[in-house]
Image (spheres, rainbow, N blue to C red):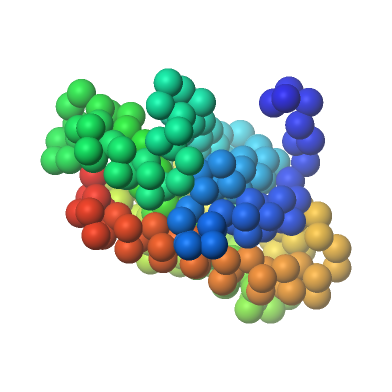
Length: 215
Ligand SMILES: CCCCCCCCCCCCC/C=C/[C@@H](O)[C@H](COP(=O)(O)O)NC(=O)CCCCCCCCCCCCCCC
């Protein structure tokens, strides 16, 4: 039950979500994709109100996907592949401009998918960083290389301001709830390739169907 879930962030939970994401034939299970994101929402919550505008956006996108996964056509929303096939075949996606399906699964997941690339780039920087590494710099470099190109000026400015108040590397590692820094680094070494594979598979699927620029 949502209300009784543990609200403390743990990197292991995110790792587990993305680990379970891929089926034997490399389809992406939506249930586990969303559960990885639920873990990340806990992390965002622990960062406080400055990050509230980001948290609210992620929460609302996860809610849209969960609504589809539990809705009348739930059997079509088991994997990202089945969702894409179903929504395209049934004209459930606004392909060129926002119209009757502003909250399609495809466009909603695309936003999280782009953010997953940010996460991959950020976590890799964190993994190879030294003790005095600046999380705000790692975060904004990863952002500029990924999500920023999809955001208007105002969102980029707000994001840039939020990055400045990020906790430093030691506090960041503590919030991850993994153990000493060596264990955090080891877990990041496991998490980054997993996230990267899920990202690549989704990216290829969206590219194949010309869905990478959905409005
Ligand atoms: C570590 C601190 C968190 C830094 C987050 C970096 C990303 C900054 C993103 C700024 C997003 C601003 C909010 C609004 C965005 C929307 O306009 C925009 C477009 O949506 P629309 O087409 O429906 O309008 N939405 C998006 O692009 C989705 C943004 C999703 C952001 C996800 C951020 C995930 C943060 C996870 C933190 C995990 C840290 C690592 C833990 C081990």
